[in-house]
Length: 303
Image (cartoon, rainbow, N blue to C red; front, side, top):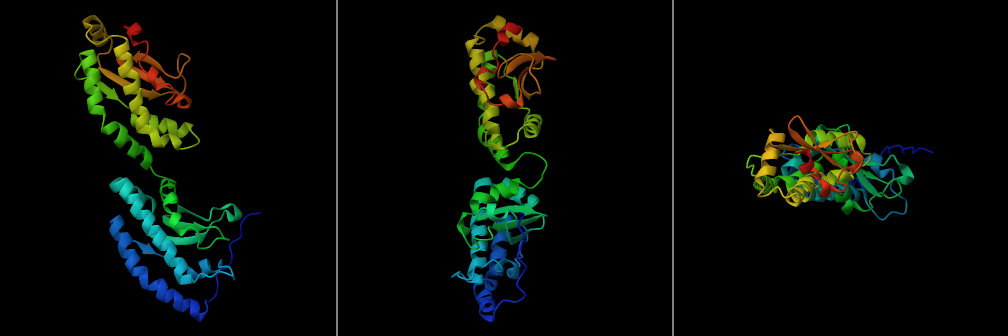
């Protein structure tokens, strides 16, 4: 049976309205100022109290003011953690997803199957979601859901976690790795092309989960570091002028490029081929980051 939301209360008792005024409404302006400063854009809290309080259990010891204040405090804490972790990129992703710059609280439409607290972004509004039987529970655990909520909003380009992985594992290390491979090949201007955009699109289209995004940059880097560099050393390119000359003739673009393809030409986790003067290390989406240490194997046999 699908979840049927409760109707909003017509009017709260005087004591509840006073509690709301004293414990929640008097803090809204301060909350909005804090959130706006964190995000760098005006932000507003728009919670329908009568809708939310309809789910208060008769035996509950909570008051409406403390419940709503608790949800907003949980959101502020989660947002502070999120921005500290993901910085300006995270802020940009959040603002793009939460395009209306609004926060609200709703009962989760999943009904009994819902977690006690979670979140999503719907129609540009960030929604704190509660299980209809657990109003007020686990308000301090919203940080576990904020990233998923933001990433769940449709957007072009990389996910936030994929971008963070690229910055951490690729951007910080690629200069040295390029220099190392250039030395092995006696080719200082060698190019290591991660092909990020095309590979990300191919993986996103092929994979049903998003776990791979957490390691996108690390996996990409490993094909060149643990795989290609080690294979070039094992195949003894370093110091061998004939092998280096043969490589230069075979690969005039001086480029190694990583590529996710629908089908490889040979069995195995990945393969190394030369196409239009470029070395391609390629694999299917199903074999992404599988045996990346084999990248570049057999290259010497292509000379």
